[in-house]
Image (cartoon, rainbow, N blue to C red; front, top):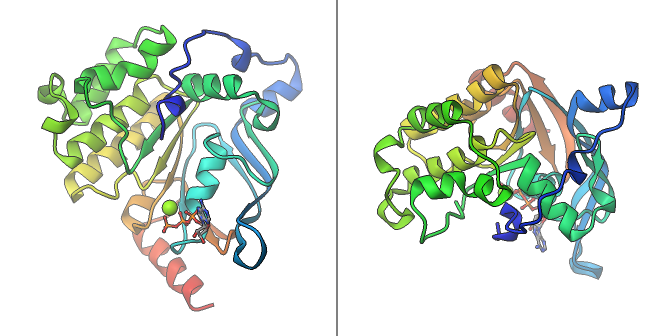
Length: 270
Ligand SMILES: Nc1ncnc2c1ncn2[C@@H]1O[C@H](COP(=O)(O)OP(=O)(O)OP(=O)(O)O)[C@@H](O)[C@H]1O
Ligand SMILES: [Mg+2]
C-alpha cells in the first residue's frame, strides 16, 4: 500500500459520505460493500490472466467475512478491487452507497482515508513515526480526533501499550502487524480489509488480532473482510466465501475450523 492509499491527500470533504434520503439509502446502508459482476484481466493475448471471472458478492454491515481459496484464485485481486486499490476491467464496486467506478483519484483517496481500514501482510508502517503515531496517522491526516476509549481498548487488546513510543524498526514482525491492525481499527472505518492479516504471526498474536477484529464487529458493528489460508482464522468469521479460478464457488455460514477444512477438502477434490 502506498502513502496515497492511506489518504495522505489533505483536503477534508464530506463528499464521499453524502447519503441520499429515503428507502434506497436505507437498503444501501445495510450493505457495507458490494461487488457486481467483477472481471479483472491482467495482460493481453496468450499470457492474459482472468484473475476475476464475474464475481458478485455483498458484504453486509456488521458482518465478518473470510475469503479463502487456492493460491492464484483471485483473493487479493478481489480485495484490492473492493478496497479501491485497484480497478476492475468491468463490473462495479460500491462502498456503502458510493459507486467507486465514477470517482476521481482525489475522491478515491478520500474514500479510502475516511471509510476504509487496511491490514495487509506488508505492514506499510511509516519508519520515522512511533507506533502510536502510526496508529493515529490516518486520523491525524483527516483532522479527526481519535475516540480515546476505543483507542485504549485497541492498544490494550493488541498488547501494544508498552511499545507505543518505539519505531517500527524496534518492533518484532508480529508487533508491527498488530500496529497495522490498530491503525485500521482506530478510526472505526465503515469497512476493514485484511489480506492475510495473520499470515506472519505466531498463534498468540494471531489470536489477538482475530479476536479484536471479532470484537470490532460484535461490539462496534464494524464490517470486516479478510483473506486467509487458515481454517482457524476463518472460524472467527460469520461466513466464508470460497474462490477458485476467479469465481465464487462456495459459501459457508457460521464456520468452525473443522467445517472449513471439510469444505476445503471437498473443493480440492472437485
Ligand atoms: N499485476 C499482475 N499482473 C499479472 N497477473 C497478475 C497480477 N496480479 C495478480 N496476477 C495473477 O492473477 C491471479 C490472481 O492473483 P491473486 O494475487 O489475486 O491471487 P491470490 O488468490 O491472492 O493468491 P495467494 O493466495 O497466492 O495470495 C494469479 O494468477 C496471478 O498470477
Ligand atoms: Mg493474495
